[in-house]
Image (cartoon, rainbow, N blue to C red; front, side):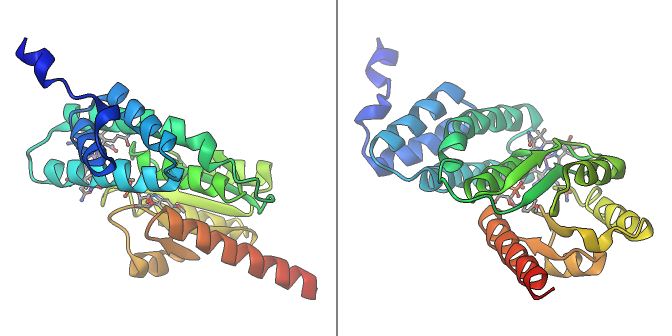
Length: 234
Ligand code: B1M
């Protein structure tokens, strides 16, 4: 009886209340509720990017802080990640639906030893939305995977993601191997992930460190425009 009375009808909540309820639901790993919330916000005219950043990414930030502080543990975080992916699945085609002209091709993956893929997936989604063709290598990628795929796909950009301080040095392995094989100048190399920063990006020889998915899109656009200008000048 009490349960019935307490049941929250998401569609009856105001936008602000719905967003904070979605953050709670993400925290609790409630995938179906997250999917419902995403659909309601879209139905109310919210832009897909706003739904993504204001409810899902904001909710995951809270999960991240509590994981760090030992309040949440791996199983709970996995459930939250799964709920986030449910929401992202609805948003993905909408973000990709901008009708933008093809900008260039990016091969992106999470580096060897690292299985975090939410941020990388977000970058891939936003890049597709901006008109880039994206080849997603998934997680735990060895250097050969990046290089072989970039060659086979004739990619413009290699994107790498790392979320662990223990896996981020692997990005340098990829860049050094590109140099050894005389391929470094063939690709724009962009890196990202929570533990990285500008200085790390420079130190390992990447072309750019990207703080978030929006920065990744802007940076990629800049590099591709410069590449086209250089080609036009001969
Ligand atoms: Co992990 N984990 N985790 N985890 N996990 C972190 C990263 C951690 C910071 C948590 C903490 O302690 N506060 C910590 C790392 C500490 C460190 O290295 N110093 C940590 C740890 C320790 C671990 C394990 C070792 C835990 C364990 O087993 N004891 C383990 C490692 C497994 C492995 O990889 N080998 C582990 C496991 C997991 C789960 C499987 C439970 C799950 C991953 C599920 C999944 O991804 N499918 C998980 C999660 C979810 C997290 C946190 C909570 C959230 C990460 C996330 O998805 N953020 C994370 C805490 C945190 O980051 N605050 C944490 C949301 C996402 C949108 O942001 O990924 O930063 P982010 O991506 C952003 C930008 O960084 C940037 O754009 C994105 C969008 O704006 N970006 C790029 C990212 N990649 C880019 C690539 C680009 C450009 C931009 O290329 C061009």
